[in-house]
Image 1 (cartoon, rainbow, N blue to C red):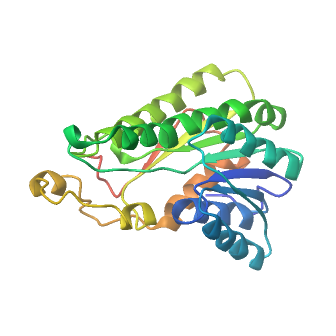
Image 2: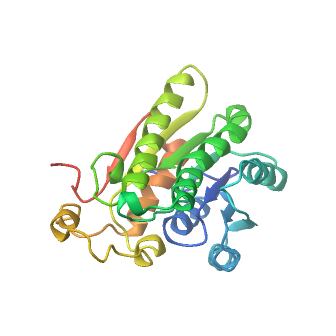
Length: 253
């Protein structure tokens, strides 16, 4: 995989950048020479991410906001363009999950899942497309193996990730004849704050939960970040409408 300095002179916006895969993706893009706008609701986490990038010689700016609001998505893109004068890559990494027995899931949890996992990427893409077209840029949506494999107690999460995966393909067709690449990455489990802080279903059927346990273990975050940053860069010029599964084989059978 060729990345090296492919992002030199280019700018990227990465959501969910306060930690986990978002932070690692932003670090990888900065290492490849990119300027990065870090977006998240966690201000302290964003500052820590920016510090790591700057200490390594990279350029990063933080933008704290709640992407569950449409206007905030447009404002984040505007902030990136204002800061860097251009936008070459949009990486939609932010996500939430609220495992629950379906009859017990609150309307608030459902709305939040839809807003962050599905609506926010769409609104960010809406805002970013004119800028990305101007520089022959790229969009990378982080979906999940949950888009392809039903998971008990995660109906809302699975629905949003399947929707984001198909949205990626629909957008790729819409922009088939224009200079914009649109792809997705579908990771399996990773040791991030999202999974580490996840509340387990106390009375869930363990035999069903075991069906989604990866036989080869969880992914290394940096491995997924490498693929995500690669797709965001010109090094991935041959990729359009792809969804790359990085899931330790969990969706193989």
